[in-house]
Length: 157
Image 1 (tube, rainbow, N blue to C red):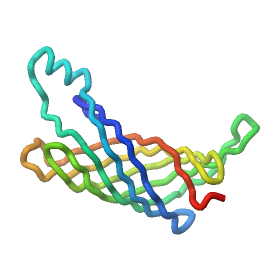
Image 2 (tube, helix red, strand yellow; image 1 turned 60 degrees about the horizontal axis):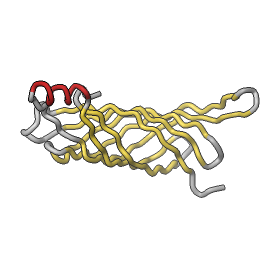
Image 3 (tube, rainbow, N blue to C red; image 1 turned 135 degrees about the horizontal axis):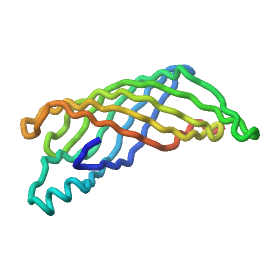
Image 4 (spheres, rainbow, N blue to C red; image 1 turned 180 degrees about the vertical axis):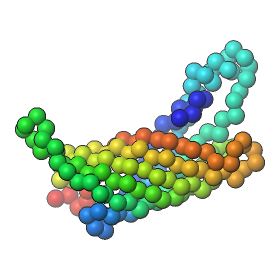
């Protein structure tokens, strides 16, 4: 959601479900930033470089709730189980100019179970970063992200 940069990350999370509906989770990622065409146009054609506060990494902890469980009939041949979760929490974000700043996170996750021990997971989340550095404009940065990956359930059964 930044006009001047695209960010891609590699990360992971670990969750503990203490009931069918409630869970705790820790999450983190290393982030890589790429200039958009708008930034390259400003640099190459106008000699202007926008203020870019590159994100380096984040780490966070969540508490979550899974209010929706269900199953889908896939092509009248296979039943696919799913659940939807809501979560909130906090953490820290590191950026090149503003340094380490605290953030709040709100998210929704969708899991499609591929077997008893693996699921496809897609998260949509919003991190509200409270920057404390005077070297950047704006004290709050809103980082919206879409994450995709696999969930593995241990122990394997």
